[in-house]
Length: 282
Length: 319
Image (cartoon, rainbow over all chains, first blue to last red; front, top):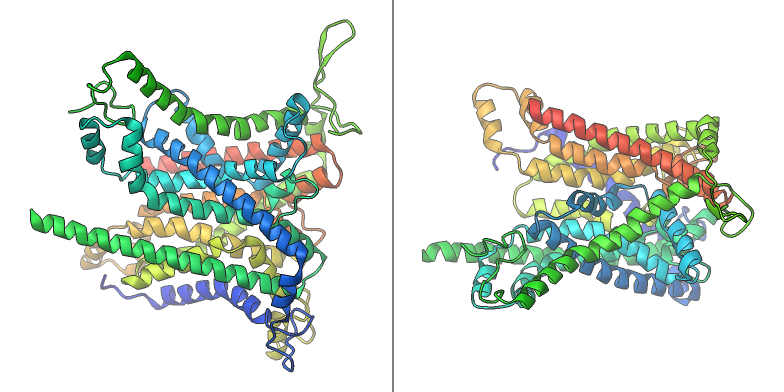
């Protein structure tokens, strides 16, 4: 690519990234601020780790974080299993009955306003409880079901894209040698789409970990997730320990994304090299 | 070629392995469960709930738990009575407050979509024109806010925009204002929060479609004496409209129903439909009205998606 960026595009790029990142940086800086007033910098006692210490002494936050973590891990796993099946159905079984409806159902949860999804799921849980006695009240189980449902849509997009590019001649060869479909899937297809499954899991985990609106609808007393706790704290007014919490979370996510990016770049490079070797051998 | 009869069954089928009756049945069972499991899940937890919302929206509110009167009742004379009433819809559509909330939500979402497009397009264009490794790095920096907590990013702005916050401090320092101004709990704050939160949703699909653009077309246009601005409007923009449509859809639809940003950054008079549904449900415990509002919102959004698809199809035919 020889064309240089025009001054307009370059300045928009700088402006856009500044817009995206200045608030995050300010949060990180203020997390070391000694003043209880969140937005006033106390230059005498700062920087301090007081808010971090307070955070780790706060049982309420730790408990909520634990619950969120458990829900996110289970939801991401469930969503990825269902999404793999769904992606397989969409890519490989091109035609089946109600495919149109299936297509709509797999994409709609991504765009639908969360208020509608949350409301409809809660009404379903209430109706189910009336008719069958299950689920008994609302809590971690109903939150997990709701999260699996909306994370699945995102996971399908990621896995479907990878599955569509898988070279089928390997599967055909294995079939030819007498392997059963299940074995072919486990030995050949699954390893090939594993990177996509891993990134779908990560994406689902983060979406579940982050969700506030749907969770508020389907959660019950005694099951407060971390975003719910943060939301109620923020509503009551800004408190500085949230800055510390945000800094930790941003740090964790950055590390995850950086690692995922590095792994992706390396596999891409290896693939390119393999392709070069393959064409060189011909 | 392998698998002639079963070509659409996922795997190419080895006829030796599938000569018996049982293996064939097993293959069919496998296929059924691969489709059936996710399909069943989505039907139960995504499609059926809408039918229930529809049902609740035509029932009476009562003081009970759940606060809704049943639609189907077995009368004493063993006659099934159906209690349906559309007064919730009449109420919602006639009330000035609700109508204003709908209109305001659509306006906020439309302005947000436009602003994210105006900021996002040059960004996506710039990223796709950045050479080598830097392009991947910039792409990751767009995706990163997408992965960091939405709530915490909104919270960051609350800190920045406060009366004694850095933004007011900077404006005072520059002498643009003489006393701190109210930035939070204004419509300005809502727009800012919306554009900020939804920007990555616009940039990512735009980037995907701009990156695919065939650059030789632009070179050919330049060789033939076409000015860059004209080439942009004649070539780049039409060829990337798929990304524009996708980005607008991903921003506009969720933005109409947004709850968190107006609740945290908007004032008490910032009427948005997501917030109204929430308040009807949690504060007033009026489930039928909340359901009716959700259904009306759903109808409006479906109409919008339908319209957008039609415009897209037309553009495809024309181009």
